[in-house]
Length: 539
Image (cartoon, rainbow, N blue to C red; front, side, top):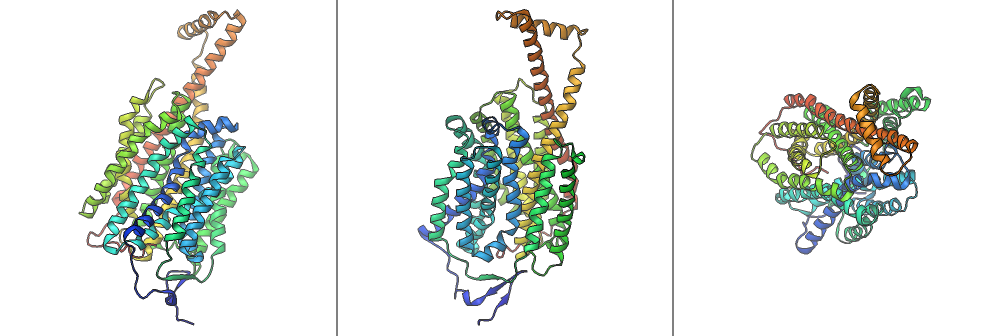
């Protein structure tokens, strides 16, 4: 038996499977592999945002409340959170190419069943399955890309991959809006099928296994199970707690206990076991990573929370179509893409990522605050400059926060750091959607009570408004009784609309305040300018 060299925790490298010298791809094969992995990564990212503009249609078509339909987004995010940190381990277990192709096929098959769903919970289940397949695509695509390009070309590879990361979320809302308006919401999922099948064929045909095969010594089933149970229970509590009066409902209390116990045991187990599925000890070796994880969580919270609320606000209260919603968001994403590569070059030349991050977080805070000042008379032109500020902010946030997370790390620690960073961002997004949704529900109730307290038969302005509604309805040849009933119904609609509007504005402002509170964390990050990250063993 060939001698084996010990690699990262939980795996060993088998030199018997090592090629005499690694040969990098050239010519058309290199182009095909690059296009394949970028398309695969974009499939994952597009589906993170494509359904956001379709939530209102899904809610109406499947007869689901906005609280229930939010699970269409969060179930996908939960699956991503679970699978992303496990991708390196699963790639070693199954073989990187097999895992990559299998993930694309699972994502494609789940997309088919998502589009065929006949009720909201069937859709939520297959979105979770889709998230399991999609979660592997980002880290595995990046690993394959680094294997394809020469070391001196990895800057170019990173730039290409970054553009793919930006184009996915850019096209998601616009493509979703077009498909919903001209076809049906189901096509937000059916569109993945031909692209997924082509990407799977290309990956199977052209992608090869790494030059060194890493053999899994032991599968950390306990860590995987604790992670899945803990995060799943936590998300269930966040989604259902508000509507079930929190701890007044026994099963909410039960799942709270399960979440706390599972996550505590997960951390304890991963720090003690010899072969952890997720190596948490890297957090202890890098204070920057620990602080970066908190910042990444906040970024995920703000990004996904605001992107969940905005389409619902403009479609339900302002009458935007799904396509118009996507068109309004499109310039913002283009700006993010346009400034990302220059910002990456600037950091290579010595510009502090802390400075760029401070600018980005301040700009995102201002964006959320300005969005929280919009009125029910706002139209698409009112959002143009506000959303451009969002695009500017995200460009200044994404690359610096990744650099901050890996600053001072080397070799496989970088791979663990990027995996944890991606997990924390997705988890922040899940929290952002769930907590924002709960916060809005509470604020709607508060604002409704406040507004109703001002409706008095002794208030001349209220009396004038009621009489105006009566006259408008009476002109439609309605009887006095019907006009009276219609008046109260119209007044109820006005109060409900105003309550939701004020609640949405509160949600945007809350995200702005959250970013403001987290800005001082940047002061605790220390970067050694002489130290450069070793990217050769990222994955």
